Image (cartoon, rainbow over all chains, first blue to last red; front, side, top):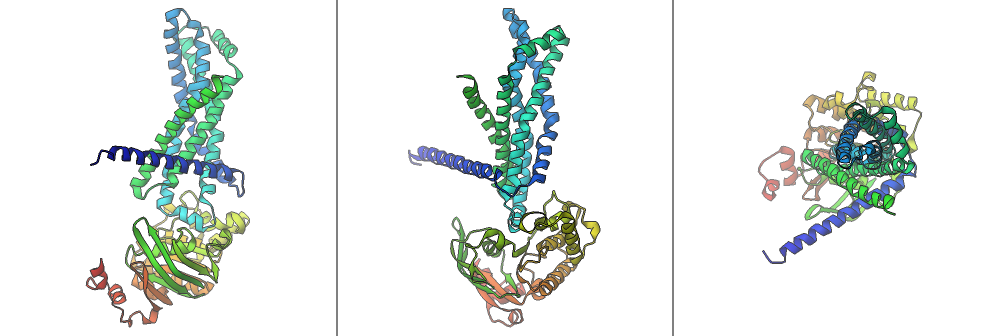
Amino acid sequence: MSAAAPIAALGRATLGMLAAVGRIALFAGAVVSHIFRPPFYPRELLTALIQIGWLSLPVVGLTAIFTGGALALQIYAGGARFSAEAVVPSIVAIGMTRELGPVLGGLMVAARVASSIAAEIGTMKVTEQIDALVTLSTNPLKYLAVPRVLAATLAVPILVAVGDSIGIAGGWLVGVNRLDFNSATYIKNTIDFLEVWDVGSGLVKGAAFGFIVALMGCYHGMNSGRGAQGVGRATKSAVVAASVLILAANYLLTEVFFTS
Amino acid sequence: MIELSGVTKSFGPNQVLRGIDLRVESNSSMVIIGGSGTGKSVLLKCILGLVHPDKGQILLNDEDVTRAERDAFLARFGMLFQGAALFDSLHVWENVAFRLLRGAQKRPKAEAREIAIEKLRRVGLGPQVADLYPAELSGGMQKRVGLARAIAVDPEIIFFDEPTTGLDPIMAGVINDLIREIVTEMGATAMTITHDMTSVRAIADNVAMLHRGKIRWTGPVSELDTTPDPYVQQFIHGRAEGPIEALR
C-alpha cells in the first residue's frame, strides 16, 4: 500500500459525501418546485397528515410530559445552589418552547416517520411499484415525496406546539406536586416570562425539522438498494441522516434567531 | 410499430444490451425469450423510458420515443409487471382504475369504479374482489389484477414481464389464455418477456431470442421448432449441453 493511499481514501470519501450532498440538494429543490405545480394529490396529502401528524401525537406527548417533569426537577436542583428555585416555571417554559419541544419532537418524529417513509418507499422501489407509477403516467416524486414532505412541514410545528403545552404541563405537575409550588403562581410565572418569539421560533424550527425528516425518508427510500438488505440500509440511513441534520439545523437556527 | 436499432445499455462495467435491432409490427404479439440476466427486462424498460439507453434509437410509429411528450407517450402503454407491482395502500379497484382517478384520463369516481369492475370481470375476478387490498389476494389473483390494470384504459401497446412466473401450471394457463384473448380482442400490440415455453406457444405471433445482449434469432412462432439455430434449440428444449452453457 502506498503512503498516499490514506489520503486518496479520504479524498474519495470527501468527494462521495459532497456528491451525496449535491444529490440531496437537487432532490430537495425538485420536491419544493413540485409543491407549487399541478397535478396535486390532496388525498395523499391528507393520508400523510394523518400518518405523520395525528399518529405521532402519542409519542410526542409522552416524550414532552416526561421531559417537562425532568426539566422542572433539574432546574429546581440547580437553582437551589444559588437560591433561584423561583425560576423553574419560566425556564421550563422557555426551555421547552425554544429547544426541547422542537428538538425532541423532531427526533421522535424522525425515528417514527423517516423510518416508515424510507421503508415504505424503499419496498415500493424493490417491488417495481415506483416503475409502475411511471408507466401509469404518474411522477413518483410528485405522488410519493411531495405530499409527505408538505405534510411533515405542516404537521410537525403543530406537534411541537402540542408537545410544548404538554411539556410545560409536565413541569407544572412536578412543580406543584413534588416541589410545592403554588399552582396559580407557577402558571402566572410561566405566562409572564414567556414571549411570543419563544414559541414562534420553536414552531419555525419544527417546520424545518419536519421538512428534513420527510425529505430524508423519501430520498433514502427512493434510492434504496435491492432486496430486504437494501431497504433496511435505506431505513437506517434515513433515521441517522434526519437526526443528525435536525441537530445541525437546530444549532444554525438558534444562531440565526437568538445571537443577533 | 416499435422499432429498435443499435440500442445499447451498460450498468457500470456490465454491458447488458450490446446493439439491439428489433421490429415489432402493430397488432402483433412479440415474445422475447432468453436466459436470466440477458437484458430482457432492461429492453422493455428502455422502450418505456424507465431506463435510458446509452446509444441507439427507439421508434414508436416512426417517432423517436425520447422526443415524445411523456404523458401522451405513456398513455399508449399498459404494463403487467413480474410481481404485479400493485399498490399495497390502495384497494384492488383503485389499483385497476389508477389512471382513471387522476391525470389526463381522469373520470368521475363512480364511472372509474364501474370500469375497474368491468376490467376485473374481464380477467375472471368478481366484484367482491374490488374492495379488498392486494395483500388479501393470492399470487394468481394479483397477476390478474395487474392485467386488469394494464388494460384499464385500452392501451395500444401492452408489455408483459414474465406473466406466468411463480404461478402453478393451471393458473399460468389461465393467464396465457387471458393475454391471448385480450391482445386479439383489443387489437393491441403486445411484447412479452418470458422463460416459459408454454407461454411462448400460447401468446406469440413472433419470437425473438435475446442472448448476450443481442437478438440471436427472430421469426414467427411457427418456425421456432424448425429453426436450425443451436442457441434457440438448446433454449426451447431446456438442454444443459450446448452453446449457451459453453459461453457461460
